[in-house]
Image 1: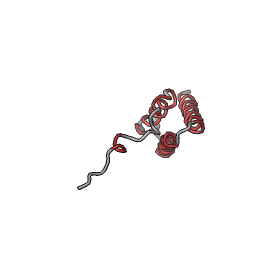
Image 2 (image 1 turned 90 degrees about the vertical axis):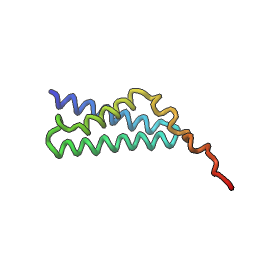
Image 3 (image 1 turned 60 degrees about the horizontal axis):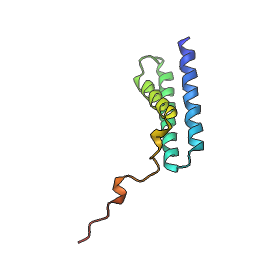
Image 4 (image 1 turned 135 degrees about the horizontal axis):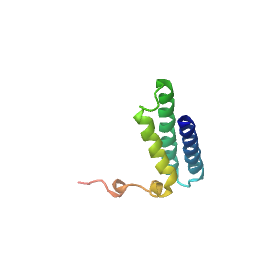
Length: 93
């Protein structure tokens, strides 16, 4: 029963990440969504190969991060904007 819940929630999060990435207008936010999806898949495959999904903390962390990104679209609201370092002009002598 627990395995069904894990598989269902993982598939739901992956579908949500990819759907959000396909629909996001900003390129940087799309890249971040693809990176989060890649980290989740990497940890999922690692958990399957190790055979002990309950003790694999990296997988649960990646699933939690992906879940937060899917459930809170405002987390990526400023992802396409340049950071504060972009406004700094080089020092001239």
